[in-house]
Image 1 (tube, rainbow, N blue to C red):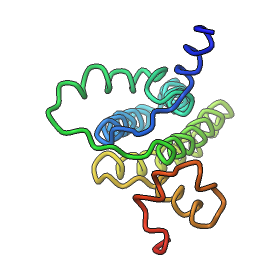
Image 2 (cartoon, one colour; image 1 turned 180 degrees about the vertical axis):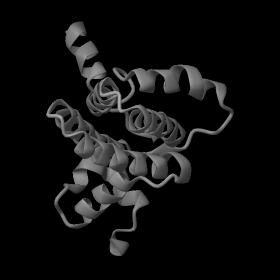
Image 3 (cartoon, rainbow, N blue to C red; image 1 turned 30 degrees about the horizontal axis):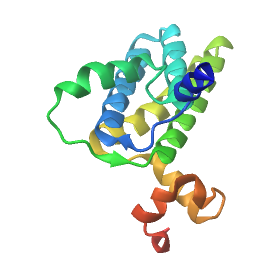
Length: 167
């Protein structure tokens, strides 16, 4: 039973999420994207993709970047915790996972131009999150909830923070 509880904790996404930590992780993603775009070194795509997949599965628990942010960087910052609902952030990480996995596949198939386009899309979205605090994936999650494609029960907190009449 204890083993099952430990696995459940490992593969769960935090809710709520600290917005500051999310933005710091996004800044790390920006750095990885820029490093790939400057060097063209394909193994960086594996690191990028693994990070997104790990964050979708478990938030920061299995993500090296998430661990550095939550255990090393964030505790040293005096900024107040700003809670944000977890499900939209997980959805956004899922989009990053799809794009980065697509970039890995493109790179493996020798389609480096396609990989660069996909990484540039990640770079743009991560830059908006890191530097402006605007989460494209969260906005898309909101729109899908408003359209009834994502059940309201998935993120009850979202009903409180988003004015559904404006969707």
